[in-house]
Length: 225
Image 1 (spheres, one colour):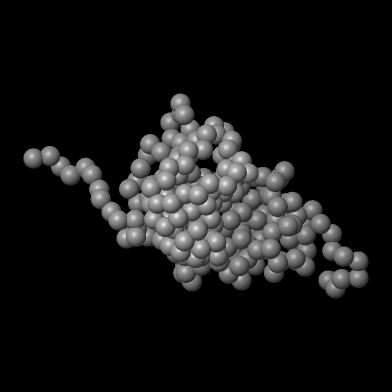
Image 2: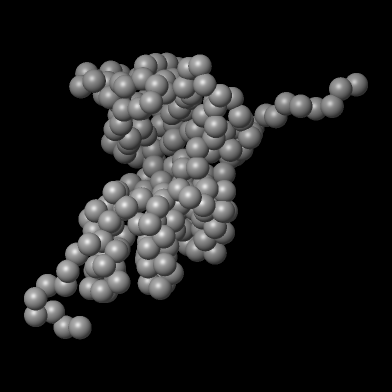
């Protein structure tokens, strides 16, 4: 008798996290099964018209296959619209501009991707998605724990510190936000200051001299100190 090495799950039974305030739900399929050969995730739109695939081009040679498993989606590929009822497969070679919205409520699309010829490595963005999913559910402690783990796993990547700063700013801990943002700026000096200056997550810090210093701005003339 062999040890059990397989797993079975229904997509609706997986953990789910709100991606934004527009009804999009992310289900971390790769994370659930600890798949190490390719990326795979599920996205569900609660209402018709909500997006199920954000507009983007995969850079660096990644190709993706999308599977519409329920409902109906409308894909826009390189500016051309395509109807995609349940059972439709959509293959996007590297560089393809794509986006999709739900044509029916409850539409779920699974995305599968990897880079040909390279060993797959799970992306750190998954933990960031999970963290902000917990935050949107109102569990700030679990959100912080997830980001602490992400930063610990990738201490020299600016993205983890930057997203931690966003979380703290949104949570009202300005001191922690500035601490993480400062570290992010040290690690990504060509990206972070400009990005933070435009990021609405940092609205509570706009007048803080430390924030202005990190983002390379100066306080407006006549502003109170």
